[in-house]
Structure formats: structure tokens, C-alpha cells
Image: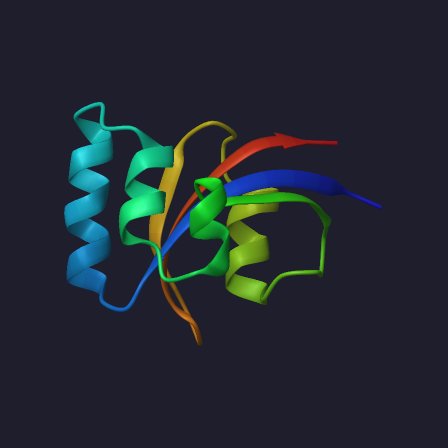
Length: 92
């Protein structure tokens, strides 16, 4: 079973996610932005979701984590929770 580890920033609006992505593209700290802006409980860990298996997350999130390039920020990705910026740290 495929496993991965990812960090994310969850916000309520696409506009906010796009603004945060611009900051990340300019070299801002993913961890610091997650702690400051993410509305997910993982914010206190800098957006760290730990290791999880394929199928543990909602489909749109899973597709990014298990199909897109590792160590790049992807998004905004819309789910029922809001808009995510997702960075997969590793897959195995």
C-alpha cells in the first residue's frame, strides 16, 4: 500500500491560497505560513500531516499527494474543507 508524508496549508478562500502561494514562490517559510494562516488543526505543527496511506485523505488531496511531483507546492486544491496548498515530502 502506497504511503506518503505531506504538509499543507488550509484556508477558506482561493484568493487567500493564491496569495500564500505567491509568498511561498518568493521563498517564504511553508512552516511559518501554515502556523499563521492554516485553519486546520495541523497548523500548530506547521501543517505537518505525518505519514498516511493512499485513500486516507479526500480524493482531490490524494491525487495531488500520490501523483504530482514531490517537494513542490501544489494548489490551490479545493475540497469540502476549503483550499489547500500541498507539499508532498516523500512517497513510498
